[in-house]
Amino acid sequence: MARVLITSGPTREAIDPVRFIANASSGRMGRALAAAALALGHTVEVVTGPAEVAPPPGARITRVETARQMLAACERLHPSCDVLIGAAAVCDYRPAAPLAEKRRRDASTWTLELIANPDVLATLGRVKGSRVHVGFALETGPLAGAHARAREKLAEKNLDWIVLNAAETIGGDRGAYWLLARDGSDRALGERTKEELARHLVPLVTARSREA
Amino acid sequence: MARVLITSGPTREAIDPVRFIANASSGRMGRALAAAALALGHTVEVVTGPAEVAPPPGARITRVETARQMLAACERLHPSCDVLIGAAAVCDYRPAAPLAEKRRRDASTWTLELIANPDVLATLGRVKGSRVHVGFALETGPLAGAHARAREKLAEKNLDWIVLNAAETIGGDRGAYWLLARDGSDRALGERTKEELARHLVPLVTARSREA
Image (cartoon, rainbow over all chains, first blue to last red):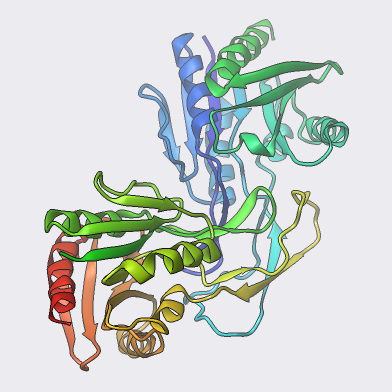
């Protein structure tokens, strides 16, 4: 049996003590992946941002807020894991200088400087070793460009597979998915629920882990 | 019996199709206020942003995302209501020009221009008539300054009462509250749960509505 590390949910990046930048990730994909892995008898570690839904009973849970906290938690857990599935919608930008006090409303424009967060999957990809790494690419715009960008991300992050889905999927129950592999294959998985996608994906990636 | 309009939860202000600005408001205060008003036999309209918790059964619910949608829903419901309690943590800034496509990560700084949203309570305060209006002030920093800012908001928004609480209260179960009134009074309510605060506040403001 494998040890599976799953990231889940959004991250939040503070603007001031009240406001933050986030996205609508619900944690449902991470929950579905964790449940599918537990059902196969694997050990599951979930690192989750503040999500609507909680990971399933039986998973070990580390709760974080920010992208940098998610990376730190994953760096601690990754060495002892065989499989990494990055399902979190990590905020890839954060405010450069969060304010210590809540900014009061006034009529003037507020110029906010955002800087790039560390890339959790790319960072772990540099110490991947024989582990199996899977990512997700949430893309908007024309489909051809989305496939090309997902392929680029697969390479940049040193992934074995990347699941491409459309922005409409975020926070919802189902969506259309494509599975791109390191070997160049690109398979349409059609319209599925997150549970259906998880029950397809998890056996595939954990089998690859056993082959290694 | 009164018709009570309650705003609840956060709002979300789009940066692009995936990212947004929000806050950690859970909708628990709005739910507690709605439950307290329903328990007294009042008719309750709740306008809620995307919150963790749903309004109680028996309340009429209008779901919105943004501050501008919240204002539009409230402007429709306000004329037929006797009491307005603004418990939502409305984002008072939004991106000036949301992007149509998800911005891709790169190493460069991203400069985001934010502009002021309309103020829901101040806008409705200009057509208040004989209604009772109650707001909340979430303040950070030294307490003396927080009381002065809450007093300013009470005047600017043409409120009858304003409940002052600390930023730590947002998203949590309990907090320390102060109740400032139009007549100049400022009463410490002590540490309470949101349900306890609601059971104190709602009879007070609906009784005032009946006097009018």
